[in-house]
Length: 146
Image 1 (cartoon, rainbow, N blue to C red):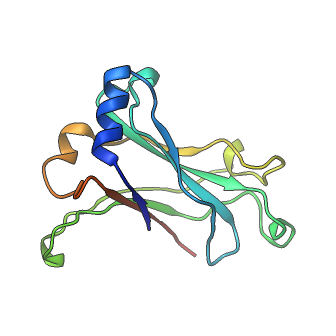
Image 2 (image 1 turned 90 degrees about the vertical axis):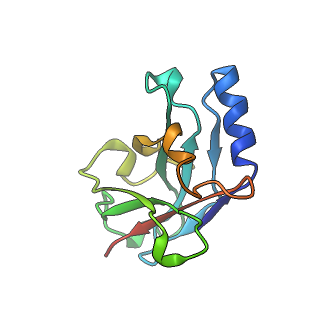
């Protein structure tokens, strides 16, 4: 689970400046042994997707790479958490993809690979329909399947 603090403030700033607003999570390991991090572009407008936030997965080089199967082909689901108090009322936003040998999912040779993911993960208008942003924070998680 990745908490993005000052989310609404950062979003307002990058949309007014028309910049990407790229933010990266801390690195982490999956239960499978892959090292990765998440990256978001708060503003996809410079890429031609105005009004959207994009989310990406970046594989990172680690000392465990020699023991792992390559390319990375695990099914991945990005989740934007709806922070409603009542868990039964939550409507998380989910987007799933399965890598198919793209360059970004091959064994990393440098510190990290190029990010691959969803350029149109969520519309700005959707962000304010529920509790996706609460106390100026948003939560994104990734599920990596066996």
